[in-house]
Image 1 (spheres, rainbow, N blue to C red):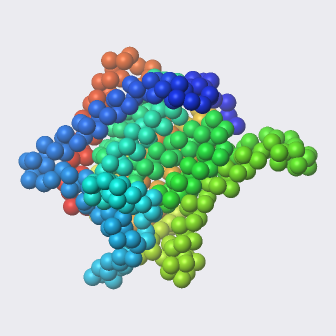
Image 2 (cartoon, helix red, strand yellow; image 1 turned 90 degrees about the vertical axis):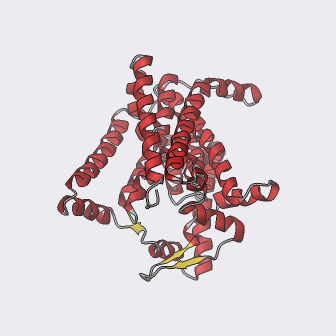
Image 3 (spheres, one colour; image 1 turned 30 degrees about the vertical axis):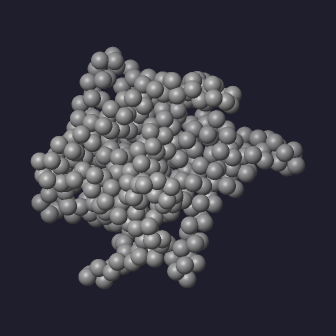
Amino acid sequence: MTELAHPPVTARSSGDGAVRTALRRAAPALLAYTVTRLLGIAVLAIWGAMADRSPHQLLSARWDSLWYSRIAEQGYGYTLRLPDGSVHSDLAFFPLLPWLERLISAVSPLSAADAGLLVSAIASLAAAWGVFAVGERVSGRRAAVALVVLWAVLPVGIVQSMAYSESLFTALAAWGVYALLERRWVTAGALAALAGLTRPVGAAVVAAVWLTAAAELARDPRWREGRWRAAWREDRRLLAGVALAPLGWLGYFAWVGERTGSLTGYLDVQGGWGNGFDGGLAFAAFIGGRLSDGTVAAGVGLLLGVGLLLWLYVLCIRRRQPVPLLAYGGVVLLLALTAKGYFGSKPRLLMPAFPLLLPLAVALARLRPARSALVLGSAGLASAVYGAFWLHGTGPP
């Protein structure tokens, strides 16, 4: 595996002292993250007051949020048949978020929708902490703070405050990647399994576990030399993590297959929504359509956006990011760019790919603090305005 740019800065010992130390180190990043998210909600509230729209409804009771809260309240089994013949089944939505919504609403006065907002709020802070921990482990504290704020000020950052599953997934993924950096294999496998119960892109966390483990085993001469018994004794935790990682993702696929009576049940359900994977052909056709139907600026903007993402990933490779980051970020990017479906959601699907932001975070960390704050503050305000505009539109994020 690639050597890390900096040695670990958090204590490896267990106990409350280590957690408090890690939290103190992350406090500036978490404070900046909280301010950014509060700014986004404030701008949304002001916009909503002018448009006579409820910010609470926009965050908790529209689009995917409605599907999650319905699952939490009634279980799976709801199907919506549209006039064009397409069939939207709630089996397209992975179960961890509605499970948590149901649990919280059962033990508190909160509705399932409000429980989803609570999960999102807590998970977003956990995600920010996990992103900070990964960034600090790889590139130092200043870059880690910049990385967290960059993740917060993404144009679609308002989704982090919605009753959606992105924040929950990113929290599990970020801490799973961190566990891999620390060689805590069982923890990484367990977090990958939970991520696999949260979103289809949980496959990216599984890939990170497997590819990191493969790189580790490839360096172990005992496996090559046939000394398997000795290698097994030393690598039992690694192999346990590898075995744990896909259980959530595969388990949900198998359950949907059993429920629908088809081995390809989940893929069939996604097909009903118009989703699937075609190697990026539909996305390329979508961009081509923008270039040829008079909305050339939109097509050029999409091409530039895809080019920027690929350039950032190449930078990550050239700067020798550790295998867990390259594997996880690369698979998230691949799945997002090769999926077909509602293309307006692609920015949201890319939001968990926080490792792609690390080269930008390192560059910002080299600026004077005042300049870095100005750049990130301006981006945060722009993100807040865009988020309010986006949620007041007609299409789902």
